[in-house]
Length: 359
Ligand SMILES: Cc1cc2ncn([C@H]3O[C@H](COP(=O)(O)O)[C@@H](O)[C@H]3O)c2cc1C
Ligand SMILES: O=C(O)c1cccnc1
Image (cartoon, rainbow, N blue to C red; front, top):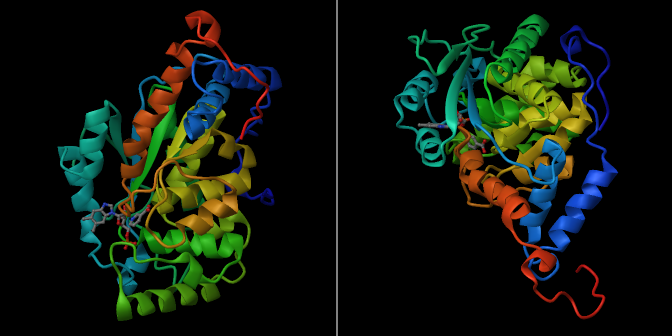
């Protein structure tokens, strides 16, 4: 991945170093290989344990005070009929999340994950709530089919808000989610432009846009891409066609990566924020755990473009951070395997009889 040319928005984000620590990496591999199981028998759970060990800089990693950060904002493009639901659902769902009734509320409660909502640009004024951070940059984006969704300054402010949101919460892991009617369109536009693929391969049904309505969604997206044909640098693309909540997540990803927190990525829309962040600072990918492959068309293409693989495939297409919360116990299990599982030596179990190679 290439870095963007210098733009004012990128100012103030220090370089994110690579997690290069060959000694730790070798030690983690050796520890996992010596646990009481056939070599590599825990499959991708071992890869996850290895990654978490590297991120947290420990051979006995422990996840502490996990935080689900759900970024919310409205989209001017929603006025073009790109969603199956009205824009009011954005603020209504934020209220539902805060009241404990949304899917993300249920799953975070189940797993003891703190839930915070970050209002980056919800049109409706939301009443104060202890779990709501008011970072409103604007009352939604402009209609990207007519003008840039955000000014460069608004985009920078939303990124800064995302950074502050991470700084404001404790713990060493953040789970990212979003709420914003119309945001699968914004994510598809970012993907199409950043990996230079036709929008037909990048856009999906979102909330359930089908048939003629889907043809209309594609037509709108093509118009947006043509309108912003000159935007190619990641932050220019983000400002022209993204969303305030996506920009907020870009900031959160950069900040969490800087602080060496584990970043649990949800579905298509949160992955679009990772795509942008990784174009700015490729090393963020080392800190990201991709929780699930969304049913949204374009997610597989997006993950392939980043060279990553998701843990789960549940045919979910919700967003909110629901896939990230669902996958959370896998991360906890991976850490426990490193911390608690006996080795052949400690448990006095006979090891391999011959020199077998790792399949
Ligand atoms: C009731 C409801 C709850 C949701 N929770 C997340 N989304 C998801 O759907 C939206 C994106 O899809 P589109 O681009 O088609 O609008 C986002 O708000 C996303 O988080 C929801 C959507 C609805 C309707
Ligand atoms: O995977 C996602 O992020 C997604 C899919 C559909 C609707 N909203 C979000």
